[in-house]
Length: 295
Length: 295
Image (tube, rainbow over all chains, first blue to last red; front, side):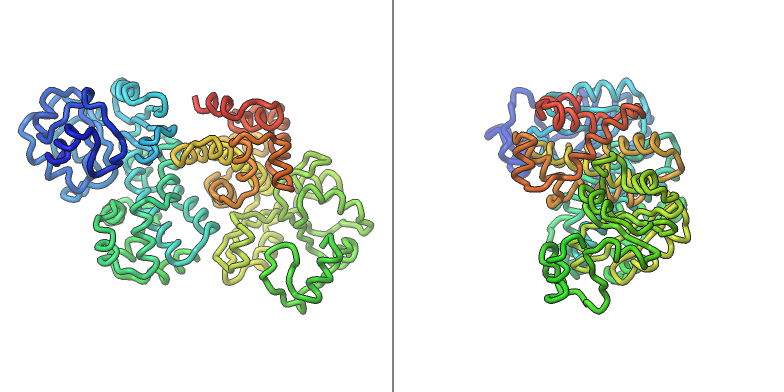
């Protein structure tokens, strides 16, 4: 963990002071540390679950080598310093080969896992055996796992869904209803398919739960920070005041810029991403942009 | 309208006594009648919007010919007497050729249309020109229309979605959360695709709003009668008591039986439809069936 106080708190009181605090940990099963080198040195498999905005800063402290280690990411989003998804960041910055990189993806609200409600995870890795090892270790009574070889596609889906969740929030804030929301989501999944196909062409069913399911659980959730952020924009907040009000940045804000810029090279048809970009980064009126989008 | 009292009420008070009563009609634009023959005789285009359970009974009163007329259906479901979707019912029972049959489909809650919230309709007809005529006449400020040539597929989608809405309700009633719901919906759309492909193979994008959008607006709506019916089953009501409690039958109840029986011939892989069927018609325990479905 990045915060030594939180480590101490969990050691003493057996629960996290900041997130899902009602959950009690069996600390005999935990090896807690706030020192990334201590966590890394003895591990063969490492799962990173740091918010993407803090990942690069944390990795700067690393003096131990990552060579030969298997790196899984449960992080959804873009590393701001390199504008790369997490898997690509490890590949380009640390020379980790893709067969040693994996992604853990939903649809999976942490709140529901804490409540032990049945959830499905997709474990993607270039090397199916490593995906199976992680899948086996994470599955249990209320967690079912599937494996996939599409590490690029699943990670882009997890990133792009946050943009569509912002769009859903904007639409809600502007007063559009459930009829429109369902059209937005069906257009969103078709747009996501086109985008991901440009990034990494392979045989995939975009309606698998790691893509469509992940989009739906975020786009329809009133608890999604991205949807909430969009909702405020739709209601007339400026980007700056919406961010201040939320006191944390929605991942989709960065994702929008990265996806938009990436797509200048790819040229996929992405009217929803373009609309969100023009609202968040070009100061266009949400009402006007959505009216145009609809036509 | 089937009810002369309702006709009189609208003539006198300008609103429907039974549905969305707050909406005021401009009666100068309405030619109201409770006599199906009067409605049919002078019309070139006829849109049927009678609940499917009452359609056949109403058509029995018909003495005027339907020959040469263009028949559109805004009805979602199966005609119980013939176990056919509405388009097929008109084709088989009245010899209407498919180029004179059309379907009007959502995603479209009537409540939101009444509130003038932006909604999209898909108008499907074997003859694109006729679809365009209806699309043009129905579109306006808050109704946008698309046309399609997939009358069979859109109508089956509109029927099958109600089964998945029942499944979503059962899951909710059993205590499953949003993570599972999103997996159920992504499995549902893949299952729907396989089923419709068996019924009528053609090039269609199952993620178009007439299929996926329609599924989502129903599956995620707490107002859906089908979802509510499923919810009661999940909470432990018997089918009979859930029906009595709701004082009307959810369309998906009949759809489940028809789809299940049809699929005995088609042989598509439809674990969700099979699960709902075994709960509603074979008295299996919802808890047990869903536990098996999940694995």
